[in-house]
Image 1 (tube, rainbow, N blue to C red):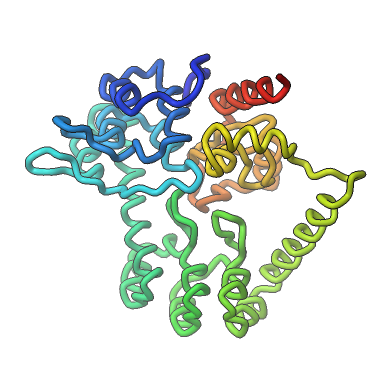
Image 2: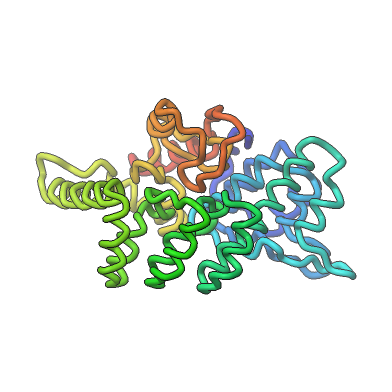
Length: 328
C-alpha cells in the first residue's frame, strides 16, 4: 500500500507526479495517490515528447497496489485501454503482457487488467442492450453476470433495469443466476434504478422475484427519512460535520468529499483502511462486512485476494490536516 503521507500541502503538479512515476520512486507513491485523488485527469495524460502516461508507467513498473487504489478513486473517468504514443502504439493490456514475467506483482497486474478488459467489454454489451453478445460471454464465464470493474457504476442487472429490458433479463436468467441484491456504486438496488427511471412494472417484477431486494429498498427509504429528520433537529445533528465537509470540498471540489467518504456508511472517514480490492472503507464497517463471512468486494463483487486491512495513511493525514485548518 502507499506509504505515509507527505507533509506537503495540496496536490503536486502534473510534471512532478509524472516524474515520480516514470522514475518509479516508490517512496513517493503516496504523493502520486494523494495528487490523483484531486486530479484524476492526470492518470492518462501523455506529456509532449513522452511515450507513456502515468497509467502506462504503473503497469510497466508492476505497481499493483497503487494501480488498484487509483482505479478505485470515486467517480474516476478514464479509458483503461489508453494507447501509448509509441510506434506502434500499445495499450495497458499489451504492456502488462510484455512485462508479466518480471515479478509476481507484474503477473498479478496482467491478470487484473486482463479481467478488467473482459468485464468492461461485458458491461458495454449490457449497457447497449447487446443481449446475444452477453449470452456468448456468459457461456464462457458465468461469473461476469455479477461482477464489475471498480470504476463502473452498474452491474448487468442495473443496466437492464435502467433500460427497462425485462426480455433480456428473462432470457439471461435462463443461463445464469443473477445476484438480485447487488448494489450500484452509489448503493442502489436494481429496482431503485428502475423506479428512478419510472419503469415501475419492471421494478415490481424484480422485487417479486427477490423480496430481499424490496427489503433493501425499503430500508434505504427509511434511512433517507431518518437522515432528513435528524438534519432538521438541533438535538440530533447529522453525523458529518458540515464545516468539515465544506473544508474538504474547498480543497478539491465535491469529488474530494467522495474520496473522504466511506462507500458503505456514507460518512466521512475516521479510521480509513484499504482492502485488497483497492477501495478505502471505514474500518468498523468493512470489518463487520468481513465478519459476516463475506469474501467478495462490496463494491465489485470480485473475490478478495486477502482480507488484510491496511491503514490508508494518506487519507488519514489529509483528514487530520483539514481538521486542524478548520479549528484555526
